[in-house]
Image (cartoon, rainbow, N blue to C red):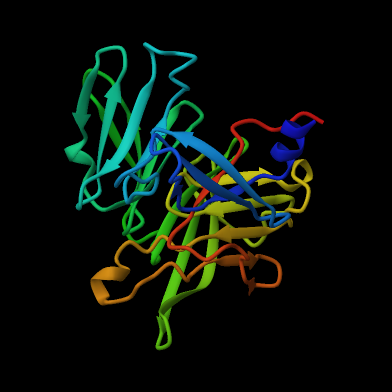
Length: 274
């Protein structure tokens, strides 16, 4: 019952860890539910020192390594120039996708293929193999915004465009989101509503959850955290630009959580059973 309640209470925000003085080999981490605001504390062995679960790079698996230990692919965005590379478990080799270009914002594994989008709105599909194939399916500037995300909504692939503006008090703030749906003919449809779904955007992999499966979530909403990694370059602390965007009303509500710099989302891998 306890596991079921906690699964229903997700998604959680993973907050920075706090080393436990009584046991240096373990640390505790806090997780806050966005639907109930409950705080959960968990011991995480092996997390300590200068290590952190947060980072500017992203990584996406083709399948869980524990299910396919010798037949999975890991695609990553890495380095200051945010380039693409992948690791093949079968060959135990890393391959850089230099032909894909630089400055990628997001990557996702969707329906058997890797998709990646850069900060200029260029969308590519990557097929790791002995001779990697990178195909462009959306030209630069077509999906242009301050930040671009990829979200898998069942069988559909969506692009979410985030727009920022200057704010003299805090440096910057999000003022709008747009959602586009990729059609089978590689054309784009603007979505004014995501209906009975909720999107979760931030530093880690984006997610879409059906609200009927998670008590407390609100439909047609985009939950977002501050993932502006360039803020420090302009003398801004960052971490403040979080909230909930109502697609229908085109309005924002605050995202209530224990204030900390750049928390990340923890969403369930599978839908909980009823």
